[in-house]
Image (spheres, rainbow, N blue to C red):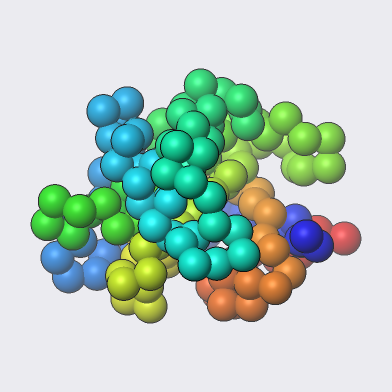
Length: 159
């Protein structure tokens, strides 16, 4: 699937709005099953659909560092009431040769019923505010809404 590498420099403003009723907090090991479930629900009925076990295994692989060392200060969950409705997973340095060195967002997702409420934006801004360094990510070229979000948050495509 074609994708684009993007990078953002530290933002000059770090204020961000967290949607009403949503709490952001750093992900911890006891949260990983809920993250796996939300990840699975995010892709249900899509071309990228996976099993719950596969989704959870992928989240656990991220935690174990299979996509680069887990960066706790850049990995957050978004909770509404007791439900995890979104998450952002970041590593200190991704293992792929084609990506820029430094913090790299390996995944950002929001469950379908919670989308378009600013949760994804709040998660990215929390990482930007917390790290205050350049951050890379990869976006699927067909994900036009995701790409627009990243551009609005200061990310630019790498040539």
